[in-house]
Image (cartoon, rainbow, N blue to C red; front, side, top):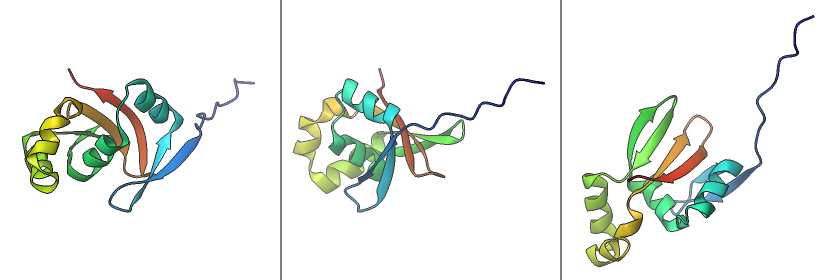
Length: 108
């Protein structure tokens, strides 16, 4: 007989509500990366609300481009964005089919 087929291991998920009222599942990997990389939950919400989405291997990579920063600045105020500008290099990867945040990282 052949080797048994291995099923992909599903990680524990936590469901979080975004500032817009929608819900997003966070994989345990995403939760770990957000904590390890000290990315504030507010920045994750901003990425989901304002970020530019680029298709990447069946998921979307979401970043703050110029337009996203401009729109964010209009809504929350330029002073707030300026004070938190060090967090605007954050990036997340989301699988929209499953409403699942896969990982978070810093862009350099």
